[in-house]
Amino acid sequence: MTGTATRAAGRGAGSDEVPFDTSGSTGAARRWFRLPRQMEREVELIGTHLVGPVDQVITYAPPQHLFGALFGQWLPRTAGIPVHHAWTDPFAPLPIRSGARVLVVCVPMAWSLLHRGRPALERARSVVALHSAAAPPPAAHRLVRRAAPLLRAFELLGSTETGGIAHRPVAPEGSVAAPWRALPDVTLLRDAGAPQERARELVVRSPRLARPEGGTRPPARWATGDLVEFTGDRTFRLVGRSSSLIKVNGVKVHLTRVEERLRARLPHADCVALPLTGDPLAGEGYAVFWSGRHNGVDESDVRAALRDFPSPSRLVDLAAVPRTVSGKPDRAALLATLRPAH
Image (cartoon, rainbow, N blue to C red; front, side, top):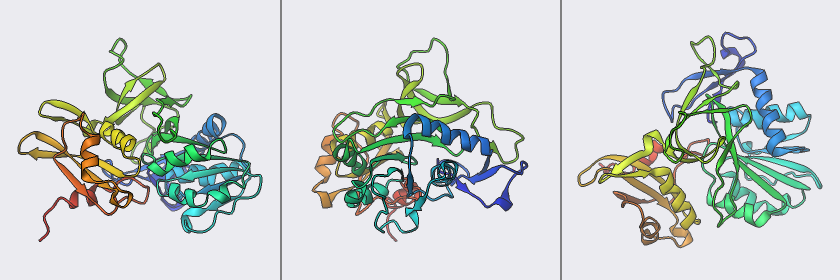
């Protein structure tokens, strides 16, 4: 859910529609329009199935993005509860009321701040954290393990175009992630009789698909670009993006699985895998950008974690992995580190 909301003056054909602009990080920048009833329905679905009753919202997600708008604006307004916009001053102390049931709306950088603010979290009666936009960082998995049962946390899978598609619990440190489960109003489209274990693109139908600028209605279905393996009628595992499935010396490599392995084996490192073309030996290849020397991780640890995978073409040691405002790895900035200095 990475779109950016525009002001009301930029609204489309429907006077009540809410506009969001995609960032262009996963394709050309484009404007999408959502109806208030779609926003309200998503808040209701996730509120009912994951969040439960809350007395206070703390949001680190700016409302310019769909995720931040849904849970930092629409949910508090619908429920009539106060909201603290922590994204405006993320290092300020958390104003958690004693005994409150708290919802925290997270982007990746929020988790290390929640670690620092854990004494404030412990004033709450309960805490639910929602995470979207990028994979949770190692700090998320550590906090889920250490702060249970006070804290429950969930990942949301979706986009500006689709809204929320699926959810799963944030796995505690040292645990295997559960499969994604589709939200109740989402239909997962797939070929009847196709082998369940074969990776295929995730295609969905939902009453919450957005209307594209220039279109008269939302599309009937949406191909997400995510590659999945279905584990049940309404559950699946992500194995990569269609753009991140590569072959190295004829061996298929899902870069999402590379990153999952690195997160599992090196929880104190921040690692991103990106495809490369034109490797002189392997044809296609991939680079791993990593940061973690300050936590005692070195290049040999990265290589050891990937010994079951074809070797990366490049390992790039960084002081910190650059990220966009929504918390996703900044692909352009990462690839720029591969260019020789002039």
